[in-house]
Length: 307
Image (tube, rainbow, N blue to C red):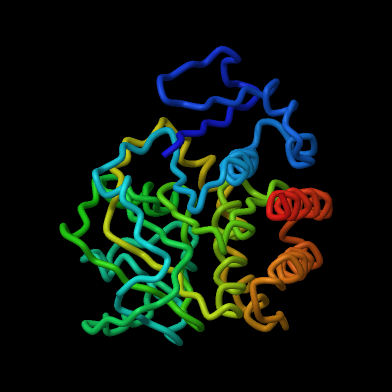
């Protein structure tokens, strides 16, 4: 499994690690991707370039992580995109952490006014679903919001052992970009927006991806922890400020996307992505400069699929 690392303005140009295919800013600019030219520096969304590098290398799935995650054994064993799992659909906002023994904890991006909602009955039976997007949890220091970190205790221990739950149409839960697998059919949905809050880029990506997944009959699968996080130093009040757009708008964004007319099928994914981000721009959640970046991404993806 190739290990690809994407540098940014603060990254050393001569970073080297055995087994790592490192792309400094200078090397990124030599790539034949429009995204590499247009992507802003100093932004997490430069990960988009890494996704394209992996696609160009012939990947059939992409496993992504962050620099403060330590992989567990299961991290290197992604599940197939068609797999047996329990399924929930039509449950609205669903705090998936409850399925792993911690209903008192919530994932970053979960609407605060949905926390008091009742938990669903977690399924005991399983069936085969198509789940080309898979989110694993993080043990010890999971991906929670700044409000949780400022008011609750860490570490957090989720239940041990294998557990998988897939969410289908009408069930919402944010997922991140820290221990996430995308199989080839879902590669275009990896796109991280750059012209929005840093703390919301992967969350709003997840809402767009879930909405488009429904049109393809796909599920989003959540599984037991595959990483342990030792979080880098953060200014929690700055994180809180950066998360305010999500606290105020995440429920409304999901409602807007749910009401948006989209087209069915994999061939419609580029059109659906443009429609979703167009709606986010029109509503003022994402800046207008996002659309040229999205167009560049889709052109790069199309070029790779044709090549």
